[in-house]
Image 1 (tube, helix red, strand yellow):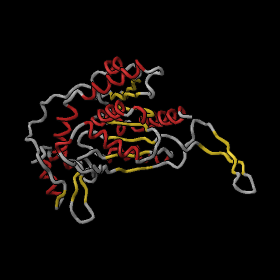
Image 2 (cartoon, one colour):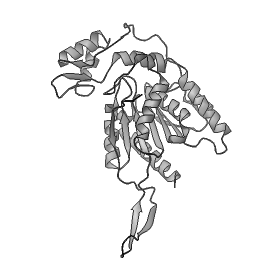
Image 3 (cartoon, helix red, strand yellow):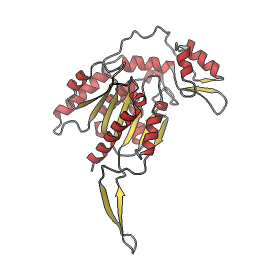
Image 4 (cartoon, one colour):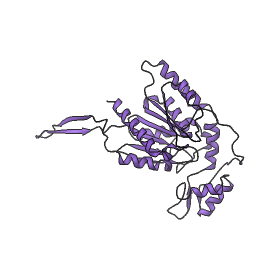
Length: 306
């Protein structure tokens, strides 16, 4: 099966690993040049968005990565952003893990720093449990393991949804009526999650059909808890412990991570970082502090391979 995962990639050409420099000699010519090379093997950071979002949410993060030569790729999960939904009957955490894996291995053979925000955190946890050998570091941004209630907003289930529209007005109307989103919320997306296409129409990154599928097959399940428990078992039974660090980022305002201490109990390797002044979207609301932490995580992961 061909997996289509739309991705915006920024790749750093070279990284400077913790101040360590490496010397080599170029001896394929008669003149031998002494050279110094900055470490070019920093792990790629793979960024996974949350529910009703897309890779657009990582724009500021990607700009920072570009400016600081940190290899990075942001993916649109299936049915989100510019990625197609595929067969709705195949929608599951495991299929989303495989989608992300396909995007990750396309960046190269090395390990990755995997960052998942909100629902993307659940996907990231399941990825790490299935492919621990591919992880250099796991970053969970404001998400816990608790199955979410089925008592969502009372809107009819959306069985199908065409995300192309002839006009912005038609897009706002469809998302407000069929999707059940408030008109003010939809208008807030203008220019980002709702944007003009080259052919003169309008595209919606938001898909209420994939929203409903993600609620049912990701957020309402115990998959996250089971995957985190599996990581805890790996930590306890492996001679060297868990082969990668786990960072849990918790917002100080309106956090979606209800019990970080329970996560640390299940997986003692969990390192909890609290952002007191930030809401749920830490990478946007506390961008400077978020990037400082991510930068340190990436460089530490890069140095651990040397």
